[in-house]
Length: 431
Image (cartoon, rainbow, N blue to C red; front, top):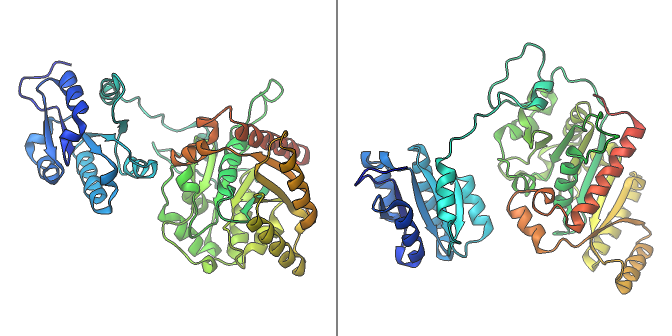
């Protein structure tokens, strides 16, 4: 692209551009004299002026000092105004936490580049911004299948469930028995693997399972974060009046991830756990059960009064723990409470996350002693995914996308395959 002399095509925006000297060199290489620099304090005023109409993008620099809430507010404000003017936003980040980058990308930034920049990084990013965007398909095939005959489907439709065939889903609950044991990571990745099963020659004619993931942690649910989905007001409205819930209102509250996985996120605001009742939860699960093949429920760490509705409906209740004292004590307390209320403890399957490897004989003996002391069977052992799992969650992508060959992903994939086989034996998955 040949730029006119004096026409400003891009601007860097920073508190101190001298901290990003290599960016200056790259901007001169790519744009010659057709770029300028703005201080953060002046950026909003400039973007609102007619002179900004020639801008293709701004390069917004960030370092660790920009993680302060006041500076982040300025940054998100600049992103919002730039996007409203049709100006692309590149984040140039040095030593910035992934959570901050994720927040700014959600605010509307188009891409981010590390600093110091690898060779040709800026060139490639500009090429991506200038490349024509492919037209979005009118409707993904799955949504077309869900729509009733004759329905008109807009570009970004919500799923339609009014005419969906009645199903009898397997209900799978996932609950962490202590904070940070990886229950939500298991729920998200297991749901993803169920919705995107490995295809063998034998299964080519089989319809992939329809999968729904419900985040019932009303206060600190992280499913939306792990899958990069917004928390929508429609979820609050649905939970506020489940007595009048129908298939259309339920479908309107769901979001679709990767065209297959349907997700009900937690509400946008923190709610008390008793905001919903056992009747509300029962209606929600029954609605999902009639529309999907698998319904996964990510439970809160606490045990609210409506947990009984989940326990009585779940075919399997995955209880996630670790090889440490907190998990052991909490497991013992939970089992004692469930047995006192005559609730179905036999539906529990205990999952040991970050389990010792086959060659760690001492660790394996500890697992055996833990199970014997609690009077349970720990039949699912998941290896430690390590720091890459945290990175995967921060990037809002499942392990299948970021670590497809990781040992943890392989074990979750095996678990998903076994569940699909069991469900097909129980009831053939409907086409």
